Image (cartoon, rainbow, N blue to C red; front, side, top):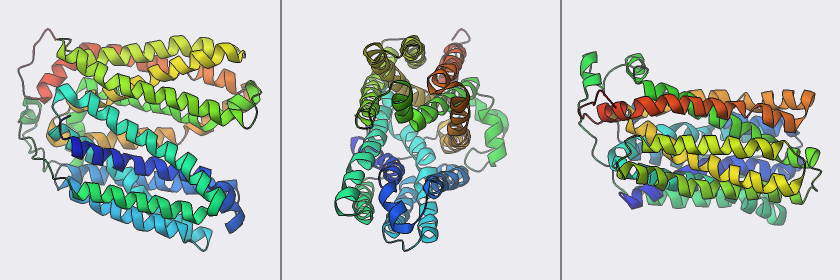
Length: 417
């Protein structure tokens, strides 16, 4: 794999944020008892780092296109380690909340910095595989945060869970120090030449005007936001769905959630290489085809799965739907890298990240409101409309991707693409 050591280091970075978010939930019973707080304060802890991430992601996107990206990541990881240790030592909720806000640095910085590095480090034919590794890192971090932190909190105390998390962050920091900054692409595309401005120095608004002219970028940003919107809502209420609608016990419900999570991981492993393989076999829009198959197949299995309360039917169908949904993400992420000029990748990913996280913030609320009126299972069914919208947007991208990818690479654009 191109840049294997660097890719593994970046996967470690992605695992940190997901591990932190999962640790909040898995240690919440002990934290609430120790600090005499309620569920609202726990929710605020989780939200605080996300809000900070949204606020800082665009500035980091600008820096990603102009400064040493690995140096920025090292600074952010160092701050994250100190903040994580501070959370574990927090004598009060206010202290803990302040430390959690600092954790948002990794949330905001990771996406634009990693996208820019992948664009310069990895050739187009291998980006799907690389994003499979990166997304697996995120899933592993989430699983470790949920299982390991919860076990540590129950066995020796919640503060030790954050000590172990900080130690893990130190390991990731060492791996990032061990890799070198790749050279930046100097490709001068026709799209940038038309603006008359230098990509590295153009203002954010100039960059956004260039990005919205890339049709595939616009539709894929929308598709990504909708896909994550659905996933965030489902993730929030998955255990409640099993308990309330399928009458599963408190012990079995988390196991089913983990099983679906495992299916998502299998899909992540499959999706990236599949898109790369189609591209190498001469399908110029092979990645988009992989995304369309994933979203379309997911809806076909998800709707009948949620249309019945028979576990023997629902569980197998949901597992297949999980594999298909997971397989959409690596080629979707790689496609966004393909279609943006390299010198704008940081800002492009920052804008997408801000829009996605901003939309995600409202997903649990909408799912909760609908669930209280019509029930969770009907809510999950109704909200599959977001995945149908992703499928329709993918059909648009199927027509525009090949030309936009060629233009971003500075290649001649086939008018028939």
